[in-house]
Length: 100
Image 1: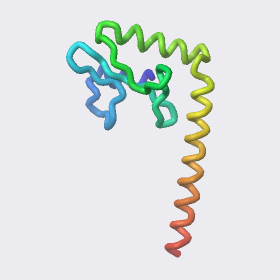
Image 2: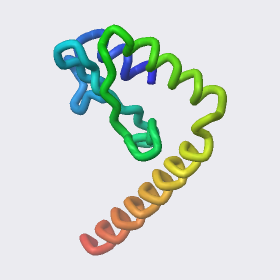
Image 3: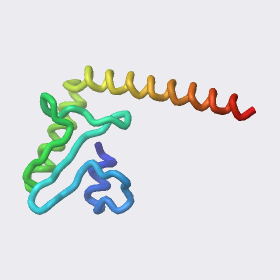
Image 4: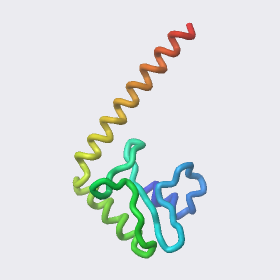
């Protein structure tokens, strides 16, 4: 979250897919973990808030995450990332074997 916020404050100049984007007086953002978006509301992974309230809301979400309120979701996202990694490694190994 800190890297995404720093990139946003720097103008997202070197970010391929910014997770925080300001349009007019609103900020649209998502929080990613293990390359997947977290659900910030019951079903939403992306939230739009007034720009003047963004930093306070973002800080509150970070505090909630640090307090463990997203632990179950983070564990699930981490497990999914591990599975993706293992699948990718197996695929690369199979492709390398075909080339020999």
